[in-house]
Amino acid sequence: KAGVTQTPRYLIKTRGQQVTLSCSPISGHRSVSWYQQTPGQGLQFLFEYFSETQRNKGNFPGRFSGRQFSNSRSEMNVSTLELGDSALYLCASSLELGEDTQYFGPGTRLTVL
Amino acid sequence: AQSVTQLGSHVSVSEGALVLLRCNYSSSVPPYLFWYVQYPNQGLQLLLKYTTGATLVKGINGFEAEFKKSETSFHLTKPSAHMSDAAEYFCAVILYSSASKIIFGSGTRLSIRP
Image (cartoon, rainbow over all chains, first blue to last red; front, side, top):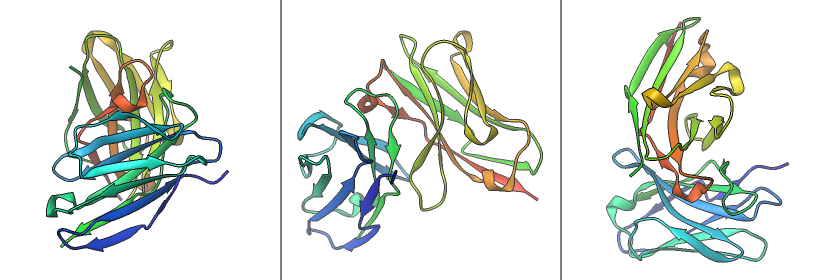
């Protein structure tokens, strides 16, 4: 069974632009979560989607948003990029909402210049 | 509030030596505990987890961890280090079974000396 896939793997943007990252969960998994990983802040939870609805949200500004499609694929969007948004963005999937075990994708490395 | 503390941001051991990565948690109720490994340019891979039951948990790649409630610890060990174990290791905690409430430690980079 294929793992979690994320596209693109690497992205370079400039301040003020917006970006969309994509995540395809493991087949059959219906819950998708997003995380931001930076050297300074470590791993931080962004949000979780299940059945096309955002179920939980971390402590990030409204510039960070996401959505989930009927096939469980998810996208996250960051608008008005700031230098501090440079990070590795990880997507994780689990079978159902509330599952304690998540399976992570390789991440998208976003660099904001 | 929950928190996770990993002692030592960098640990270096010789190949064949014991690996010990320390993790202490703070939680008002018994949490679910996890160890994840991250290889360069990759996502996180679950090594092992403790939810309920036996306090000694065995994971992949020869790693194991023991949940010690009295010490609020969940240290990760491996009897004999291999060069392929070089990676970053994250301890994590959640309350109940909600993955969205997961709190990660700051990570420990493990280096293996030949």
